Amino acid sequence: MISVEKLYKSYGTVEAVRDLSFEVRKGEVVGFLGPNGAGKSTTLRIVAGFLGANRGRVLINGHDIVAEPFEARSCIGYMPENVPLYPELRVSEYLRFRAELKRVRRADRAEAVRRVMRNVRVEDHADVVIAKLSKGYRQRVGLADALIASPPVLVLDEPTAGLDPNQIREVRELIRGLAAEHTVLLSTHILTEVEATCDRALVIHKGRLVAQGALEELSKLRETSTTHFVVRGDAQKALDVLEAQQGASKVRKRKDSAEEVSVLDVTWKGAPEATPDKVEHAVAALVGAGIAVREASPRKASLEEVFSLLTEEDAHSDHGSDRDGEAK
Image (cartoon, rainbow, N blue to C red; front, side):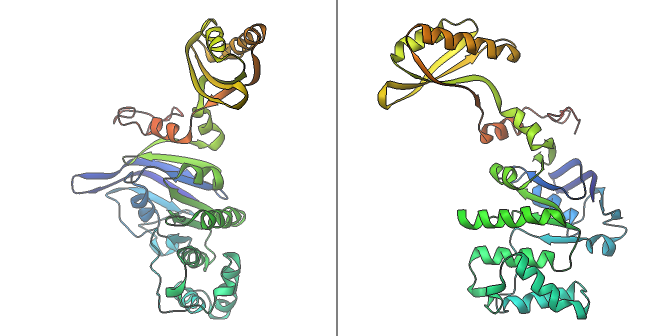
């Protein structure tokens, strides 16, 4: 549904997007992930036809965004980060106006407005002036605007920006529910947003694609060589036992809690596939020393740590490749 080929965009000497290529297949919800300033919004504006690229090609449902702009843009519902609403209009008035601009058939407009208001759950605010809406409801109206002409492709730029936790959860649920009928590309710099709403993720940094894949594939990057032990008993003895284990390169005590319970982390050296055996021996040694083991589990890096790894400045030079082994 969306095909981006070798896209390049610069603003003077600033390269916002560099040799960027990716595809979004029909029915997918794909997260476009990157830190602020990575080139996400620039890319989405080009994809939506609101900004021209210096070079490269964008196809929307088989239509070239430059050669066939009307056909391509008629397939897209675009929601920018800051939705340009008309504050003096009521919600239903605004959506009727947008339906007319998007050439929804006159006979179908009333039903189209009712449908999108129902889908984004603003029916009870149909007669409310937009200026009086909360930020969360304005975002919903912006999403309704993107949906009004029933486009097969939705391009959403930071759809939960500025919302409170409850509003974020509601908007995520709305987006997830759109997957049955729409292909969705949404940008965000919030890692948990991708986990909550997307099937697949694209990670961009300084205008380049540095990683892509299903969430399960990207989650593998969170695996570490560290085991998390929760033990009860003499903490110092537990430390000594773990430090004596073969392959233990680093042992640290994270915290104590009630009932003499301690949390210890052990980082192992050597091949990752050998780690389970090392953990098994460590548990046996702890029990043999009279230390009760409540938990022994692999520690996963936080999503923030993974993101830092993927976007590390010196990790991807101009001749670098992404973590799935695909040169970008």
